[in-house]
Image 1: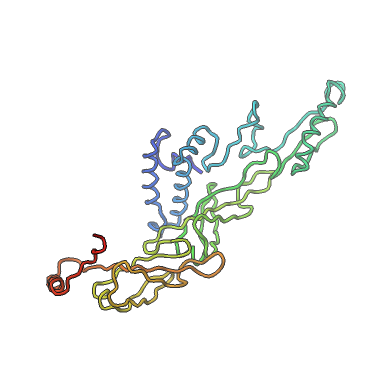
Image 2 (image 1 turned 120 degrees about the vertical axis):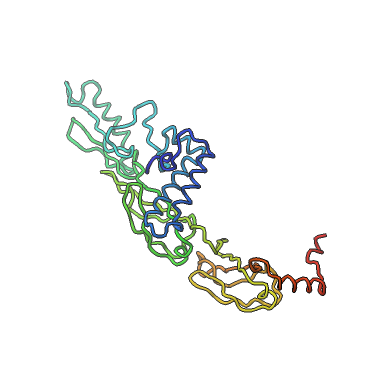
Length: 330
């Protein structure tokens, strides 16, 4: 993952407002819905979101600036209290191995308190070996090596966290989508049908790798892109349906979009703007089975421009049939 300031194109001393403005501009530019023919747009959009999660949050930004977390928000190894930062060459801030000399100098193991030091080492690492370490190995009286694998003391965090934005249709029906990882690797990820925003997909063994440790996992946080027609409300969907003045007065059948198609809705005579109809089972899949509903709200739309004939008709209607829909508000 690149430096989040570099991703957003802002200086390290940029104000919170400048960061927010840069994020909005880039998110709009790289949103997958605006770049349907660009397969790399989703990866850039994910990178922008991850960068904003770091420097767009006041606390995380301070942690990043102090070097406490990396560009993905993971804690950086700070070393032992009062000591150095650990052995060189250990990728990701983790430990590869430690060598302790328990003897071999003049006088043998018993000289200079060597045997007591070995007892101390054995007592220190006995618990760690039982909890995931593999214990000491090596020659007698010379150099002994203690190794720790995933889950033991000092194990590096090898998990990768990325964000994937999917369309509403992909969330409902599932599918396959390509994701680019911070290390440049690309994977085809199967999206389960009925996935929700905020849900996490875990791919075992697809994270970072370090010799001597089990591979980390890939954690994919799902976000559902805003839809131009549907609004998500839990398991339900909401749609504003434009209808004509004559459809509102005379009634009729109109086509209503649903995910993956359209259905016919009967609009009764004298339907006011704002009236809501329920389409049972046309919402999103529920975790326990079945689907939510879709709610359709009518919006009466007048024709564009001035229409002298319509105006004359409304004037006659006003004179012959006056009424006040706001009477209850006075």
